[in-house]
Length: 237
Image 1 (cartoon, rainbow, N blue to C red):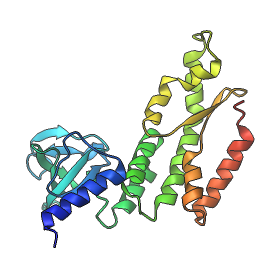
Image 2 (image 1 turned 120 degrees about the vertical axis):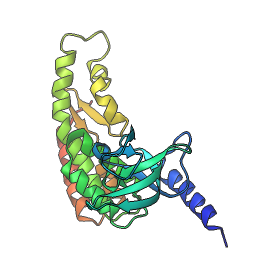
Image 3 (image 1 turned 45 degrees about the vertical axis):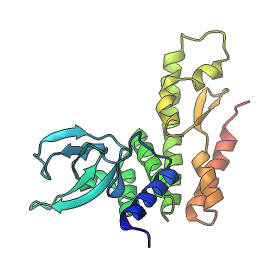
Image 4 (image 1 turned 90 degrees about the vertical axis):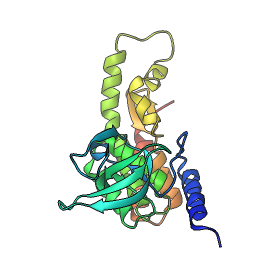
């Protein structure tokens, strides 16, 4: 028999390998969880909303849950390790755990209630941390649709910034190096540039993954429609 603590450690390492998420000094001693709602992610010294603030945790931060406590007001706090030396209490609603039943659905609801970059960022957390969830097709479709809906605004912003600031390099290279794309690239969301229309479009990666991995899902049918429309619109040569 493998000791319980060793089993937890092995599961934690596997979790990091699956998600591709690793901190310099990963915490240990509990169940992995990830911050998804930074508005509620105040790490406190006690399990109370007026407890002393220790620090704010950013979206995507990995923690491990040691225990929990529900107050008279019905709010549940989790005792979490942030690093080997830092721990505190955080509101349950701020995090999700891949090992907790129903947290994938809870994160999907948060994604649906988000918009623009927040939706993309939370969708990426979902895809990185819930590799076996049956809700992945819906999230992939949402990520792609959101990226394409943002492409027009990104196009207008880039055109305004670059209007009088082009050098001798190809015009498309200035657009595809536009700094407004950087935070999307960090979320592994890419765009192509239509030279004729001078407009960005989402590159369709999430839609293609959806069709490849979940070909029989209703979301895959919608993804095929999105890709057909993309191919009919974009001229990148």
